[in-house]
Every structure is written in structure tokens, then in C-alpha cells.
Image (cartoon, rainbow, N blue to C red):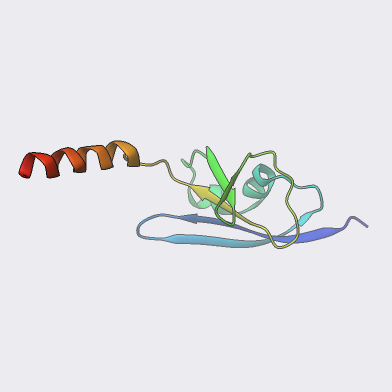
Length: 95
């Protein structure tokens, strides 16, 4: 009998959050867990590019451990460094 582990797959939109608890086989990768979860059926157009486990970025081929939570990250709308630079420029212009 194959050993299983418990993991979660999480994805958040501004208006809705998804969290799925799964039992998967040992050796399952982050990408495989996402594919096994109902998330892609609920969000069929979702393109998974960046993922993490408990806020730490990982690659899709990372093998999961019991209790891991795979988090799917949305792309940033603006580069935080660029946004800060513009804010500083605006402050200097206002002075």
C-alpha cells in the first residue's frame, strides 16, 4: 500500500479564496498536487507560474512533505521597486 501525505492547495483572488485539503501519494510534487486539486476546474483559465510553500517560493517540481500548503501566487500588477521610485519622485516634486 502506497503511503499518503496530507497537503493543502491555496489560491486567493481579491473577492474569493480557495483552500483544498488533499491526501496525495508520497513523492507528489507541487505541480501534481495542484493538478489533483479541484482548483483548475474552478478556475479553468488559471496559469500557474509562481508557487510557494508557506510563503517561501519553490519550483513546481518540489516534492511535498506532510502538512505542506502549496500557495499559487498571482502576478504582480506593478513592480514594487518601480512603484516606490515613482512615489519618491512624486514626493520630491511636491516639495
